[in-house]
Length: 150
Image (cartoon, rainbow, N blue to C red; front, side, top):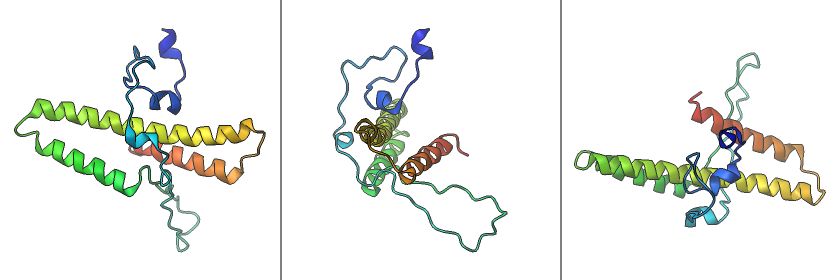
């Protein structure tokens, strides 16, 4: 019961091989793509809309969650997995699960790395700019709304 009530952070998720409640940090799976910081993580895809009336609600800009090449690689792997469904449906579903888990772990690592960077600044007694915090919050919001398909 205590495990279920424990707050989870992106850092905790990024470091877990198995995301089930019984999972521990032992035997962590290393993901080479997730080991290096992604310079393109969280790059904004914001196009100003100067012609839009201010009374109209403005949808938040979606941020890129992966570098273009990483996203393309994941898409190619997904396409291959989906094509295999006709001949090997069970194997395809297992591969889809592994692919989704790998992607979730990579995304969590990106968010955790960003948060760790902010926390290092705080730990050194440095002020983190409101703009940096606003950008981080936008990335969280964009990701959260995509997960909810809002």
